[in-house]
Image (cartoon, rainbow, N blue to C red; front, top):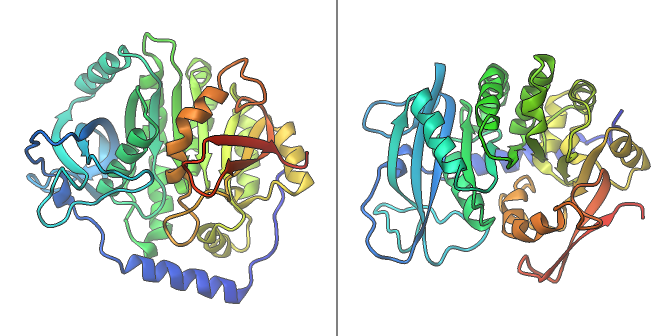
Length: 376
């Protein structure tokens, strides 16, 4: 069993809540940024993102998906242009007049039936590379999750197929309870999507990457696949959870059903994650899996026993003010990490255990990246 850390204080809770409320007051991009714009010759790259969503489509002409739950899964495809001066870890949001030279912009979109979505993704998968499924977390609008995956795909130089699984988050700081219910209602949809993606004709793995509450949803979907006998699908998966908002006892119970994965389930953690501190308080002081400390010998023992890999990424800078989105900066280092994760690469990302991520140098552009075994 994974174990809880220090108990948060009431003062800390109030500070975290104040930060989140202030963050919620900032201007956020509306669905208008999904309207396609013409792309001149600007030197911009583009990323095609395939979308499967349990969100209801918004009013015709607005181009996206809202916060209501759909009666059945919807499918789409978006092409996002990345500006020539893009900085890793950032989304250069479009302003009043979208400019492909300086910001992310939508340059194309289409709706799919289930059958046409499956054909389009299968064709893209035949081009080679890993299929990557991004399951966003709490407090995300559709357009934020779409542009975030485009940023990750661009920074990580993903040559495969980026797929967004968008569940109906309210996109509000005060919507935590509603978001958890919406994520629960989306388990079948995510499990169904993973089955669809894993039956392609290539031998490449399907990486499913769940952030925050999306990590809980990811584990629940994989658990459901195991319970329904979809072992062949699970064998194709590479599961990564970033700052998972999961009660540690629930996490342990999920792993009991899921069983060992190959490569091991990878969990990115940071004990100073303020968003998870608030979640812990809201959960009656239940420790969250994404805030575990690899310095704790009980956590290290549990990682070995459960055949999972826990990596502390506290050295990576965050951009959101409460240390919950470090994974967005990790994407730029993915090409190096993926090389170290290949079979036969030595002490690499395919090993179970507890590790600390080390970026040698003062910035993420550092030339050397190491994983140091915690307690070693």
